[in-house]
Amino acid sequence: MKTQRLTVLSKAILLALAMILAVAFVSGNAAASADKADIQFTYVTITEGQTLWGLASDYSKDQSQREWIASLVELNNLTTTDLQPGQKLALPN
Image 1 (cartoon, rainbow, N blue to C red):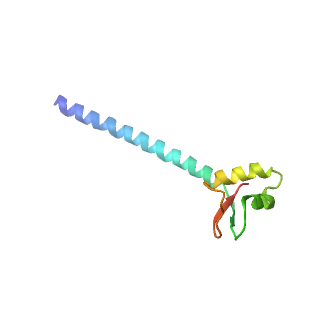
Image 2 (tube, rainbow, N blue to C red; image 1 turned 180 degrees about the horizontal axis):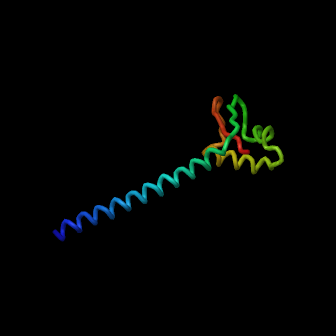
Image 3 (cartoon, rainbow, N blue to C red; image 1 turned 30 degrees about the vertical axis):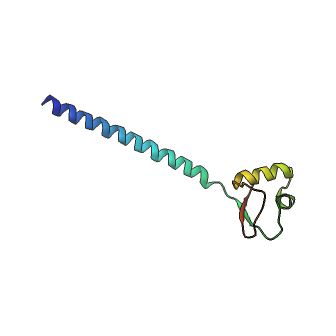
């Protein structure tokens, strides 16, 4: 009888913990999703002969071209400076 009570109590505690974790997980994901929903990017499709410096010249606005290129590289996870025709890149805001 005592063993049954411990088993029921253990199951109740595990269920309560699972519910708490589930609520925390869903709440955390909802907040993260809401933050991401506000971010919008302009995209450019690379044409033959375009370079990072050429893009910076066209799109960097008041930011230094070097800083803008660094942001572009980070935003698009670029591992090379070679751009390929048809490649789609998100532009830093």
